[in-house]
Length: 403
Image (cartoon, rainbow, N blue to C red; front, side):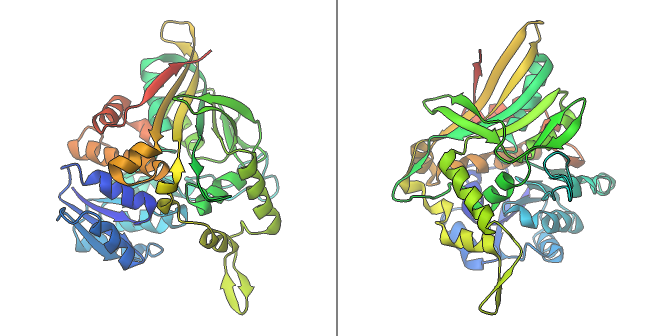
């Protein structure tokens, strides 16, 4: 397996570190628009001669395809923000490689009724090209980060092993992470966080299909495991709601994230001021994206690990009827302690937790345990081998029966 990892930021760099401990690939090209950043990531692992750095323009499909052909790449792993999904997606197949990503093509709200009707949904542009991938006998494995990713695997596992009927598959993510010395310092890309939190959240109901609601709607307090405790969670836009119903029979699918009142207030303020916009404005004669300015003013999440403490949890709460015909309510989850990920890998918990899943998926593809063609989500593959790999990688998952 010859891998092209596009993006050497926090998640990309963490993914490289996880992969270097495995022997399933023969080459990994770490590429970034900033060659020095790619070289820095490769330089973290000087003894691994399978790694090389390269420069790439992720906004240009031809640039991606050229790099794929140059290094005889078999799998393109997209570790940049979702603005660049489509050129990388198209560049991978043009170059003759399979593709993996952790976030899907961007949505566009409904032009006249954004808080009840869907417009262009997350991933729609990718699914529109599925036949091309099938005809080319290539695989695009989409949404295989932590979220989307692990909750999708849990949905497949719950349907196969524990539930005969699923009333609701509800993603519930939260943490008790604290960053010392900062009044406001997101632990993940603020560009992506703004995108998913301020867009209209999508909900799926079997008898209604996909529909939207107001941002931060339907607040509920969810008690997270392993000492994290109660966190208020709200609806946000996320890929799992668009992926799970395609392969798992569920009456309702939701995604709620534990943001906290302060974080929500900041996001609302950014929106009121127009600072969430990606449309450039003129500043002293120069076009500037307001959201890029916000991102530039905040610390790089990848650099916060030594200032962070606490744990982060990603999971899926499934309610319905068990295989025994009795009512069942189960929370499947994965927790990463920042102290552990920093001591073991030198990466903060959120980026490390995001990075482990695509590396496991790549290994399963290499082994032939996961196979397929077309545009497929994690739900399209058997879940047990993936969950076994999590344990093998030293980061086990958990399961808790709910009231």
